[in-house]
Length: 547
Image (cartoon, rainbow, N blue to C red; front, top):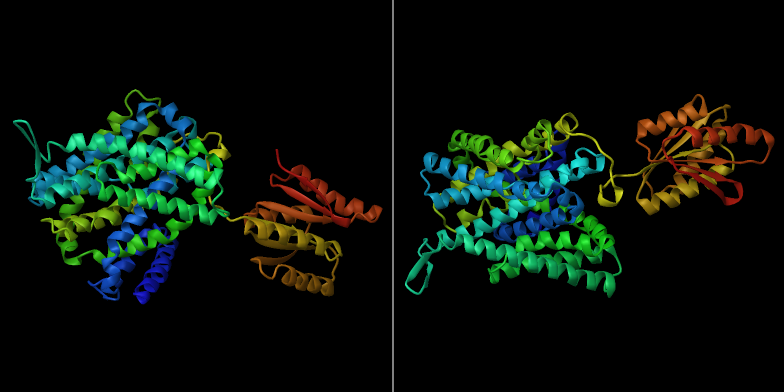
């Protein structure tokens, strides 16, 4: 069991990173690692690990839906009106129906089984869409009309809807479709009760999500039961998972919808707490996605995937271009989106991954007829659409969307900070390096130490190098020595290294020092678009932020 966990985490991680270097989504590499480790190829995973796959998939879906809820913006949703709501129901629903009809023709499924496949294939991938849309929000693409928020909301709602229909259809098929309800002289089949069950589960799911958000605010913000962001994330994740598990035991509400609405209501009730939880769930997703996609790969039956490859590609094409395309058209009727912005929906919310990985193997494990084909179609949809979506979102957004002003209070994007420390061989260098070390430890930043040679002083440079190693021993750093005009070299290196802040020293012990070093700091303060901090002798610090 432990060896299987180690193999999944290490090989899954490095497989994902290798895929990134090949300009593919990391999840593609993870799925391929799962195929190699799984019983079809290497058979390196223990049966106990494979038995836990369903539970691990449930945890992963909970994490990504909470991330989606915490990434919503009510003001932008209100601005979009019914567009986001229509995006949540029409494209995915019409794609699911188109897939169901095609499955009846290609695989001789009955309509209920075809719709079960449609619910899996029609769901959109939070693993691709959520980070993609949050990234667009951080850069300002489409934010003026709230397009990323509308896609985020529509994607989350459609996934919840299809997850809900999937669970009800699964129960219906597992029972042979016979169980129903008799009221007086009227007998209703399980399929006829489906719309009523959907309405009930949506309403109670939203109510449970709102209640859970209030509980979390009370525990984590008002009563201060936790002391760190890690503890906040642990409590929130546990209670969110409790909602999902409770919904399976008491199937009168949608646990997945409750999780997403919990995140949404947390933003409204306590925005600082919501921001802290975003970081915690980002960390959880780093682990959860590895298990999710590696275990999906391990579940794939390669012979079934090979035999259904061409019909599967045809099914995906019809579902996306006809079913989803009609849904996009109907969703944006009467909106203020122009033709280019509507076209962005094609790459914006077509990617498949997370739900397919979570649910693809479930029908097979439940003994549903055609479950092996459903799993193969789920895997195929990931391998085809996830790379296309991950490439198309950042590539086409600048071509199809307008750039607007970013509201930093509504966006949280993980970025590694790099600080540039410009030092000479004087005594002030130690103060600059000490200040840089303090900031780097506080922000988990990387440091670039730059010395621009003005006068040849090999012993002084070597001493500076040793000081850097000593003071920044526990910090990722790079020592650079160059020649040229000091302020020009500082700005050049800052641009090349992707620096977020510049720190330099100023001795100020003589008129000459003031003229030489003061001119450098004054030039940078006046011209740099980056924040500049000047460390003066006797621990005096001045700071300038670009306007």
